[in-house]
Length: 515
Image (cartoon, rainbow, N blue to C red; front, side):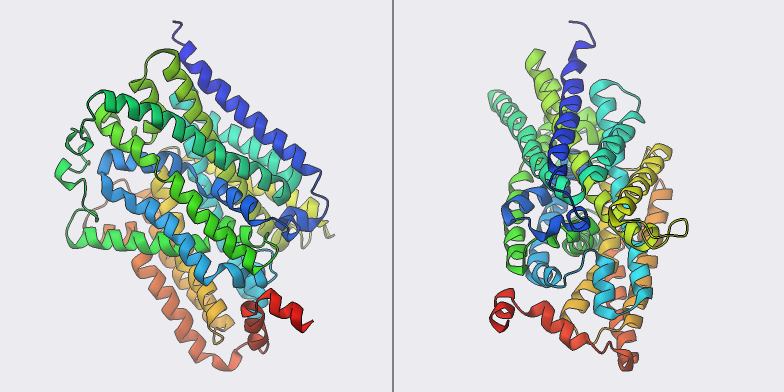
């Protein structure tokens, strides 16, 4: 066989996913006529479709590639990542989803301004949305580079460029209305792309006598020994316990602070539909997260040489070809490549819309060349900025770990928007000064940790642990700051706070009866 023939299925998969994404997006453009269509799909997306779209955008490069790689290298305690990412939606459903939808806002800065009547807090929220969105976009572009390099032998810069171009075409063309259909399709594509190869690989594993992955040797110096496979916490005594609990805080509470997640709930017709959407999302995520651990566990048996920091994130892409020879192995590799590429496109699309929405409203749309641009034009210009900035960063920093970067994005989101949403929705005493102070404490604390972690190759001691996983201290610090400063400035509580709280917590059915 020609040595390049094995790359054909991967190339075909990437092309087909790109074409399908653009085709579905183009079809959805005909439904996008107003500014509301671009921002929140005119708030008419039903729970089933919205849940599939949320699953499509939420299951990112870290979910598709990172989880399997972490389990391959470090063992089953890395299951805390998917557990936390899923459980975050349970917290979101109980505490945030319905009231947030009833706020009537388009974006997180809209909610902050409506709740606190403060442009300063709005601007601060806009800055944080852009930073969190770009931090989360970075691993999507990096993952695309890993995928094309692994399956096609392409230069690593090609993946980010291709994803950026496809996402920009889809987002600029039809906004949220168009991307909703694309992301719903991509969830089911990702699920299929992992499920079918996993079934084939498990049959081969059973045929080989079902060897135990807990006793498989690994070649990574950093890998956990076999006897640590089933530990529920990271190794290292007190430091290991801290890392685990900090990870739980970041993933459980960070979900509600991710801008591309929150904006999805503005697209539901009402608060009840928002809660139903979240319930369906929990089921979809639970099904999906059963699959990446299969690849990680089988990788410990059949591909232990990939258990290194440089190679582990390619385990999902490499395993089918290593376990299955011939054309079938190439076809299965093409299928997982399609799923991986769909993961990058769907998550990047959601993040780009969230960031573009904020930039268009608070930067470009306010004044451009002495005049105010229309909502759609401002959105399209903002989309270019939202996509190009993280793409350029990924080209300049190709060695940043996918799963680690996503974990840091969760930590920043949990340290900033989680306290703002919880207190803004459930405590009438929150003031603009308190919110701003808490956002600054949480943002600067977690942001410092992000810069330190991404610029440091190795970490050791408690200083490294505290900065590597900041959520356990940065979230309480931000929450406490908001409460204390709000108490000290209670005389500046917004006059409309009581009315706004009633609006957040009054079911739509009651409002209709009153009307």
